[in-house]
Amino acid sequence: MSSPVDLSVEIGSLRLKNPVLAASGTFGYGVEFARFFDLSKLGGFCTKGLSLEPMAGNPPGRIVETPAGMLNAIGLQNVGVEAFISEKLPYLESYRTVVVANILGKSVEEFCRIVERLSSQPRVDAFELNVSCPNVRHGGIQFGHDPRLTYEVASSVRGVTEKPVWVKLSPNVTQIAPFARACEDAGADAVTLVNTFIGMAVDVEKRRPMLSHVTGGLSGPAIRPLAARLTYEAAQAVSIPVIGIGGITSARDALEFMIVGASAVQVGTANFVDPLATLKVVQGLEEYCLRHGLENIRSVIGSLQPIPQDGFVYY
Image (cartoon, rainbow, N blue to C red; front, top):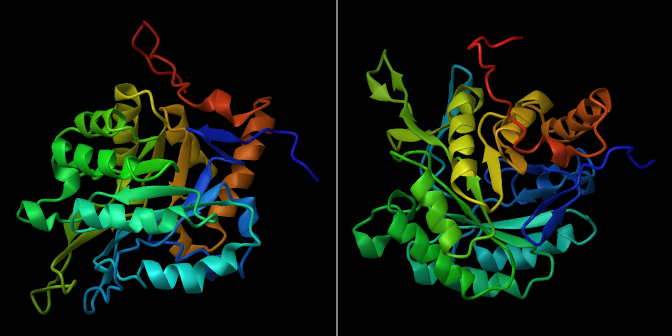
């Protein structure tokens, strides 16, 4: 039975049946969650980050629970692009949902080589560039910590594929707007934000870091207010679509991001707690539209209302 509400959104030239995607690193390669629900019900999902060659990642410990979130230092473990093509992509053929390949590289050349290899795969619909990787040719500085490097990798990838290019931005910067504008100037179709915040946890009895890498990426509900603010700032800075990520566990959370300007959202850490989290967000968005008499979800995007002139916020 079809929905009475139009949940579809457009991210550049790409149409999503609804604005909910699963975030990279929390949904495997898609096939792992297919036994829980029909992936075709999602707007799409982002694959685990793909490198040119397989990566083993960091030694344990790699994940630590925190109040309202978690720290991870997985170390970008993945099967590599060739194994993804031969072992993972065939299982996705029967699902009618957008597949976004999350890409990582230590140099611009690596990013381009991976994208060129995957561009010929019909089942890959778009690319999401993880610019939180260290650029070995620039002394280890992350692509996402210098707008010039962000522009360089985005524009280079834009030049080797006709498929949509998204850039996933790091929150660990002073201002997000220059990075979002660099992506737009480079020809990116969208920006996704935010990646995880850098944090750490300590075993006070042993007086040692709880992560083998010492620091890790903080995700989950704890970062949602920060991610919503950065999403708002990015949406104010660019005209290309913004995709919001950060602590989204419900439709209410997703709506918060969409109201401040996100055209779509990604659900991440919640997938570890509830494998049906993304599906529940989709259902909640439909219920919201019905409750408010909205014919489509697009009317919610960027609909943040100004504070009344008398200075009071009414609830």
